Image (tube, rainbow, N blue to C red; front, side, top):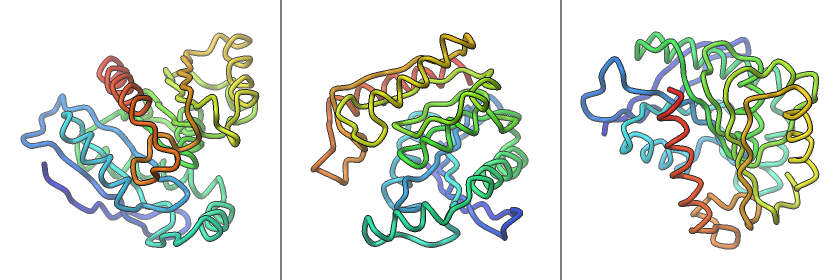
Length: 223
């Protein structure tokens, strides 16, 4: 595996993306955009990018906070609130463009966790060049936004999640039925952020491993 930093411009200033690249990538190597949690582009997200690379994917993790990392939940909450949705989507759109040029790709998968899951789902509805999306416990956009969804989505949720709770996930399921959307919902008996192995209070190894295997299979099918 190799890593590199990709620099590019956005409407709100320059930023970078952390890239993890498998050895000897080819023209058919699939690529995934990986979106951070509310903490920022930290070592945990970079580790997940490395896991993708070890599975044969190019992983590109843009820095939506432009170099800032949260030290505690209060700071993370403020940083997430201060990030305008339009800014986040614009950064992802420019990531697709820059990474497409860098790696010769016309389409990407996208995944993310918590805040990143919110952007991964919304980007699947709004950003050209996204071919498949696997959001982990992200917030659900309005039905108006979801109605434009045309790429496959594998939405990962936790039944014990007090934030993205079963009622919110039900909104996605209702829109899926109403608009015949290409969405599958995975439900685990787990808490919010159950994939994050740096947080022992919520990490669920069995659920995380199962979700990881299903997401890899999903991206291998659609990318």
